[in-house]
Image (cartoon, rainbow, N blue to C red; front, side, top):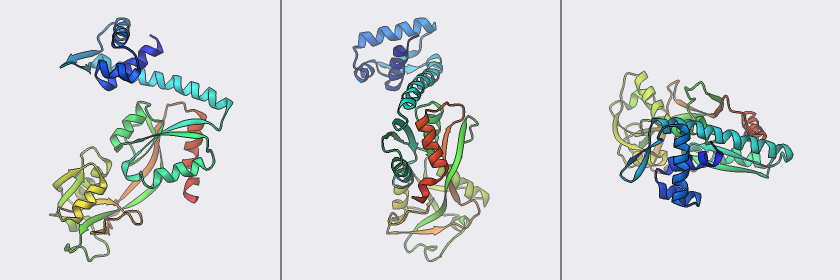
Length: 295
């Protein structure tokens, strides 16, 4: 089983289409087909089901994909490690982060590190919490800034920031004149929430559950900014981290929640068993040390 066949298999699994994968790899479709046939022969089992001219990974293919990604990662890490040993000021960090930290925390961390290591490059990925955990587990990214803390024991974690949660209401709302509120005071209000798999959605539902409430869902969004805008428009209320200066919706009122659990913990996550290149280890040490926060 050669490295090229594994790389081509991963591309085919990600595109689920023979022609698209061949174009992405800049090879001919027959060449890719022969590679897949060779790999399936060596494995001793088909790896895809053919459905409406597309390819769908079957259980055997899903197992191979997980291990192929990890094997390729190990090879890339070894190559990077060797190269960086010869030139420790160069290398690439593959960093994932939440959409909600894309305008402040992620840039601050990167800017602080590159001030010390200007030749280091970054490959960046924005995604939701559950997606970031999967990307780290599968070795697609080296590290991720996410929250809350993952449940998986395979993932290591270090807290780097804690955010106060706020209830967002429109101006003129019955609670808008308060300085702060408890989540119980929003009982009976329609809620604008993120999708079920998002970390902030789970935090909001947990806050309500602690006071014996379940949210009446007015709308589900994929972006915190959308939730704030819809709350400002009077569609419902929502719970978000305290906005950064000059980033709050001008038509909304942000009321700090006084509940003890009304905060979101952000942290750096990485695979506990993953050997890292020196540049990734150096970046992680920089973030964990919180040197970036003093810059």
